[in-house]
Amino acid sequence: MSTHTSRVLLGLLTPRAMHGYELKHAHDEHLPGAKPLPFGQVYATLNRLVRDGLAAEAGHERVGGPDRTAYVVTDLGRDALASWLSQIEPPAPHLSNVLLAKVVITLLVADEATARRHLAAQRAAHLARMRELTAVKSSGRLPVAHVLAADLAIAHLDADLRWMQGAVDRVTELRQEVHP
Image: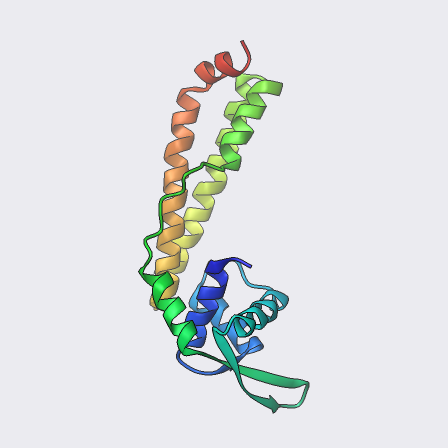
């Protein structure tokens, strides 16, 4: 379990007591575009939060199915959440990008034309995704969280597109470096 996931769940749980099912849906609703959390991860994280004193059981209810345990954030959990929220996120120290790896490996095992075709196909996929996100944003009134998620995704896609253009411009040089 990452600290990120546990702190996000603490934050979602802070306004009111919720059971795991509600918490999972609150995550998916309030963080559009984020990787959906599996129910198993939500319940495992809740168990660790309780174990660590950051959350506590608030009661049980039964609504036409199995018992559901509601959870609340403890004072210690509020302090941990406040501490996490106040920490500055450092820029990623390492680059782990599948696009870069594919360009380099393509140039090791194939030729420049193949690398350029792969980059062109990837560029087309990125542009199509940008168009989808732009259409979603302009389709009507969306919750602000959805607009912000689309804006973030578009910004990342735009950065990838600019990087791809630089890669296309340097394919010959890179080929000489990786395959002399």
